[in-house]
Length: 276
Length: 235
Image (tube, rainbow over all chains, first blue to last red; front, side, top):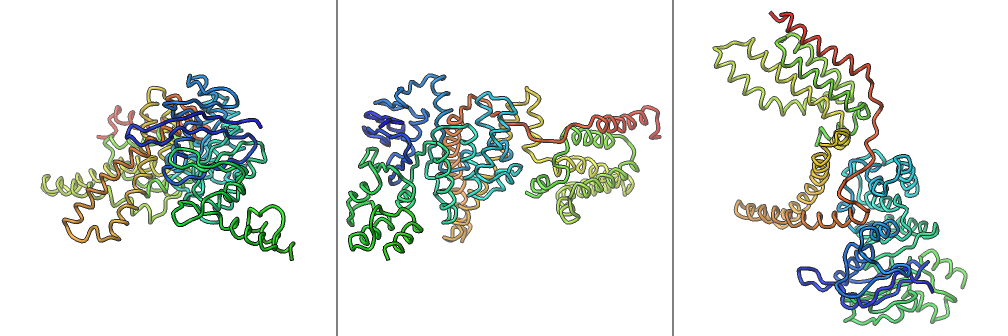
């Protein structure tokens, strides 16, 4: 298996004394949708900031596609061209006058020609179906629209790896479904997807590989079925299994379902009909 | 904010800001020249231009309330101090109104980021326009946050009495300061992640090309006023 990122014994504490990563070691596989699950304060965002070289480990090292991150200006420039991050709060990311200008910010920093920047911006807006918003100011957008613009920001830089930090926060059900489709589409187009969330149902619907973080360390990692089956499920545990996983597992035990477990409701219903 | 909203919806939004600024300059110039009848005419012309650009009567009358707050007291002071010189007072009111409407014409047809994007072409102004753009953008983020906190405080009777109200307000302001620091740190991260090396470069706003003929026409009208004064036409 080829590794997208390798982290060896990473330690990081904030100046306030909060320990965010405590000897975290992890290898992230390539060509898998990797979901990081963790409660608030488990170190998900800190880890993502390390992966784009914004934060530097106080101890340990990070390797990107076989090459250790060196924190020189040129290396970081190249890294951030390849690895983009969509932040949790779009208001902390979007600053320009209009959507079109906002999405042009990243490509402009890559010193591309104005024509190329325009082409990339149009392409990113079209991919997310938000061309009609291009002349709108940011403060006139809904939360879901801001979220899409924040994704377009990263797409326009043509990043190969996209990190999504809690992208489903504050989204309604329709917004979540639409976000899932967008992420699946990006994955099919060849992008590497890493996503942080504490929503186990969302994680289960998307992930090919799950990493559970707790107190700045990896609690468990692997394919979703294995990870969720192994999670301790008791009153004291901070975790619960995805609802669909739980029901489908029971139905499979009772002989109503066969084969691999369904990830989405529609897959589940189709599997049930088939077993009838 | 009403002017902000009007600017984004204006039919003249994509007219080049250079043309609008020159036109505004010409109106301001005429405003400083001593021709009260022309001032009256120009007030009507600008009112017409405002409606043409998409400002409704309703919006215009709402906007008019603000300058009236400072024009009327000024006019009354002049009226009393000049022993009832109505002509002088009306002239003063017209001139003030003309100057204010000249600015309104630009403000209600050009969104702030578009104007800043245009001014960014002048390199020495870049740092000022970048800071102004961020201030403008985060004004909305901050006011939305303040509104949410205020509602949450109200829901818990935070403004029930004068003392409680004062305390809640202090918490609100203190909370906003903290929030500003948090957002700014995230914002810095997001700039770094997108390869920013100090400059907030984005594509310039998209306007129609500058119409030189109109600029020449506007400047001609302005110069006409100056010549009139030089030739003593105001006497």
